[in-house]
Amino acid sequence: MPPKRRKISDLTVADTNELLLKLDGFRSSLDEGDEDLPAGFIEKLEELRDKLQDTKHTSFSKVDPMTLLSLKISSGPLFLISEKRQAIEGLGLAEPTGCMSMDTTRFLIQLVRDHVATVTEAGCRILINILLLRIVSVMCPGATSVNIIPEFPLPRTIFKQDSGKYSFSGVVDFLVTKLPSRYTEYLLGDPTTALGNPGSINGPMTSNIFEAKRDNVRVALPQAAIAAASYCQLQNLSTTRGVVTSGEQWVFFAYETRTDGTGLVRSSPEYSLGTNLEGLALVLGLLQDSINNATSSEYAFFSTS
Image 1 (tube, helix red, strand yellow):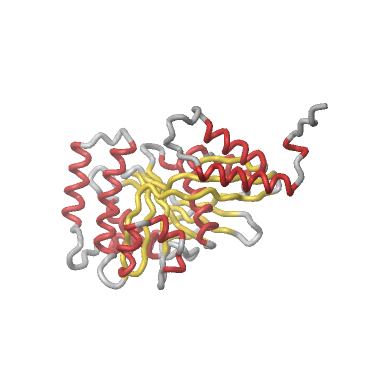
Image 2 (cartoon, rainbow, N blue to C red; image 1 turned 120 degrees about the horizontal axis):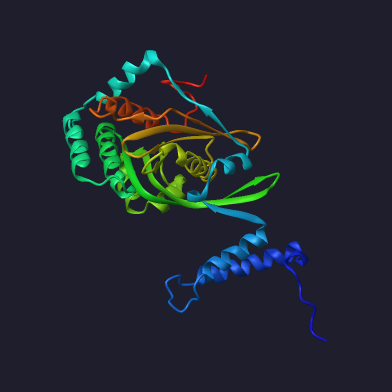
């Protein structure tokens, strides 16, 4: 008599753990570039693993506002304090010795506007790069360095809620990391290893999440919030700040983890560079503030009510 066929629901905890270990071992030994692998084989293995873990997996790019609600992540506003606008613009206009000047920054932005198709996300990133490089040049002199890590992968992170377990993974468009200057070469040589082992860096290290969006930047806020929540969990942080931008429009946000396991994402209005770059100084100042206070829930230039 043939053995009785078992369903996944029949597996004991011990059976499931043993199967997961074997599945992980098999998965890690596979060469994903092997042309002999059947189409979709890797994805089916991941589906089986998720089923065994009873985990609903979503990539960052598929996250929407309903995802935030299912994870009990609430939303709130950040209001720019009008009396401090001049101060933040002054911060954006500051030109320490040797930095990329505002004149050069304006020239390069206009060059992109005149000659780059920003209807694609790749085109938008060229514009974003200019502003980030201006920030790097302003903030780097001294013992601290600010570095740009494009396409930074975040490993799968699991969130547990009453409705079940959810996992997320994906790539952050830009991670902007501030750390002691002597570790710059180490970080840029292998960002994944360096950021995955923060204990090897002696001194403060912070990072900001940047998501690029070709248009309607606020639509990308949920996926940026989940990326920030994942980064907080991976780095054991209570707060991290980030930006969603098309290069022309900029939304600043902060994600806060609460002690009860829920989360809160606060976001600013959209700020535009403006036709004549009249908003450039404000955006640059807010970028500096965000990077300088990447893990702080105290706001120097915003109020929350």
